[in-house]
Amino acid sequence: MNALLNVSNLDTRLRNHAAIVDGISFNIVAGETFALLGESGCGKSMTALSLMRLLPEGVVNAGGIVQLDGDSLQHLSEREMSAVRGGKMAMIFQEPGLSLNPVMRVGDQIAEVLQLHHGVSGVAAQQRCIELLEQVGIPDAAQRVREYPFQFSGGMKQRVMIAMALEGNPKLLIADEPTTALDVTIQAQVLQLLRDTQAQSGMAILLITHDLGVVAEMAHHVGVMYAGEIVEQASRKQLFAQPLHPYTQKLFAALPDVTRRNQSLTAIPGSVPPLGSIAQGCRFAARCDQAWALCSDKTPAWTEVKGGRGVRCHLYSDGGKLSNSKNYSTNAAVDGESGVATNAEAENLAQPTSAFVLKVDNLKVHFPIRKGILQRVVGQVKAVDDVSLAIPQGSTLALVGESGCGKTTLGKALLQLVQPTAGSVQLNGCELIGLTGSELRNQRAAMQMIFQDPYASLNPKMRVAEILEEGMTALSIGRNQAERQARLDTLLDQVGLARNTKWRYPHEFSGGQRQRIAIARALAVSPQLLICDEPTSALDVSVQAQILNLLKSLQQELKLSYLFEVFFSNTASTR
Ligand code: SF4
Image (cartoon, rainbow, N blue to C red; front, top):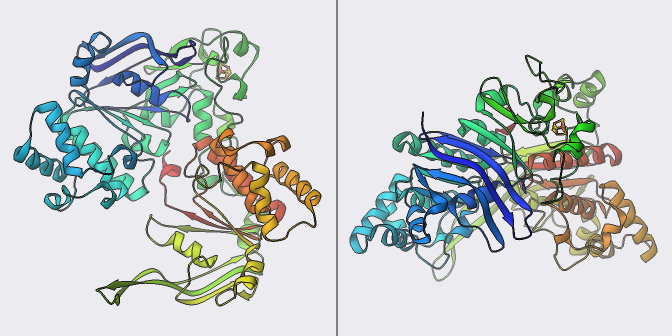
């Protein structure tokens, strides 16, 4: 079958010649989805922007061929290219809230695109806007076109972005992490919408994602990207049945899995190398536990293996350790771990200690709905309604549910950051509801929170040392500065950060390192219970595994109890 999109040796570089996208090639057939999978910083989004010819300042296309429906995109003038964008080819972005203009009505934003690409305006444009919103499942579209983006939920904003993208009946839709910012129910709706649209129109989709769950649901073919290169290409079925490249294997191994309950996750050590830092050898060598001398000396070439798939790894090249193997059974690291919990672990699970760190009975948090000039109460929003739970020392309780089901409000009510309407919250047997400010402050040290977004939860103007010391000073922990500094060093050791990092600012750290700082901040006041509000949802799968392993080892070392607030993810069940 002829490919709709043909990308051959695409090369995108910084002005200093460091390669961001290094000679990647792939094809997409009409009606199919090709997923580009990999960690942050691997060059996935830059690939998309290269195809759209929307590269940021300082980044240039240095070579390669991009053919869409027979047209060579590099040879089009800028005027011709802007007709292609929003016409044959459209793109939707990760964060719909940032992609829409907050001070323009939604209908006006769609009408602007209609005017630009089709010369449609006035009543006809208005009518077409309503049709497009109905097509993407926005209820009451005639009313909604007059509203502003802030009046739409995250999922509805992404539907608006999809409506704008579909407006030109594109042959190729580039979707850059289209569901990362959405909860699982909305994610399923958006993915279903993309599948339905694809089935109706036969458009091809280039899907950029770090989420294996999304790949499992959407992709026909998958390219795994690492440090600017595609390191493995296969059909979805082949990849999920048997990933070949050590990097792909590690991505799968880093996924939480019920069969490996109570065991450490297989985290990928290290991080993606900086751009242009590797002149020769395999870019994954520093993180690969199957590397040997050849891997650092010689850059692995692309090797076709049976079944029409390909891989960039010396293991499969001529003379490589697995070049003659029939079944490429390289999953020892993945499969080697038994899926059965040991007897000791099973006993551990079955017999938590009897002392409850936290006990919640019939907790209610209701918010009054007020109306009219006298602000009369006309109803109640029952954010938390009659919740009871108990967490023994050293145990983890997971609170699972969609966004908006009351998990975060419950967490805040436990910390007494919102006033419960009724019920009881006991921490180590002490009733928290009704305590005065100073009494509550004494109890707060025992219960700390770790937030979802490590980028937003650390003060960018404070050094790590100040961030960690703030809570200790507020709760009078440590008799003097020297004692607090010593504790600070211990905390950094515990969360796996070098001691000298305490003089650095949050922007100098990766997402996973920032979450380690957030964990150290929570530990600084010696808590017994940590409330973890989706602590890994903003992180890559490999970094998620590192953080979950860290939390598990801290639990064993410090006998911590955890309340995990998570939305249900189908990622773990993708294999
Ligand atoms: Fe690992 Fe060597 Fe293969 Fe690179 S070439 S992925 S270092 S085995």
